[in-house]
Image: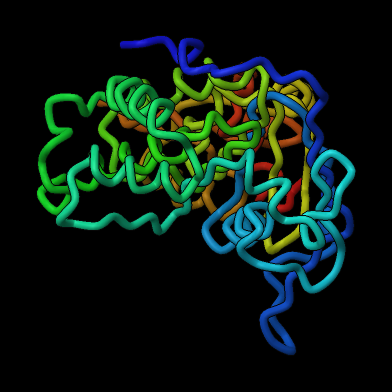
Length: 304
């Protein structure tokens, strides 16, 4: 597979900063998608984690200049994107959650069409399309109509179109939906390769999608920012708070009412249960090293 570093057209010569200040999005008199949301994002991979309905897609659409906020501002390198959206759009790559394709076009035709929309010249378009079809592993299917593609293949086309203009800001919303395990790993590696000189925002409810790639993590729930920190800082907050021991299936039902259960493994002798708790939950419980799934459940469930 071609290296993502080979996709770089030029080195970025100025610092990049996306600043979100007191952002709010109100849908009706009682419903807010975001409330008082503030964040500063520099180069690297930002993993935006939260349950379905937490406000992730609302934030992504505002950052991509598709939706305007009700309150607050978003600035790109110091300029308000509501007042100067084209500054950001020129360097933006975006893969929405509900990405659609034209079923009668081939992957090549679709990417060439998207390149025209992004104002790429013919020579650059040919080079980028060829490279990106290799990156997303669609060379052999490139001339087939997109209507014959599987969901995972269409998602890979979406990833390719988001990268056409070598974006400084890449926003991907639930990008691994429909991808098989091998494709998921390929995509994570691609994000890691791309993150050196650009801002990549990966929004998902799947913890494993960001565990190996994110340099910073944002936890969001009910439209509010819960945490913004490097993964290791989140894990440090859970030092001496994650426990494992074996229980029976009947005991497990009761434990789920008392504790945050972050994992279970069924065995012939019972169930190995993994619990996040401030103190030792049972005399048989042994401390174990926390992982990001533990941290996600701990903060999202509001027990912190």
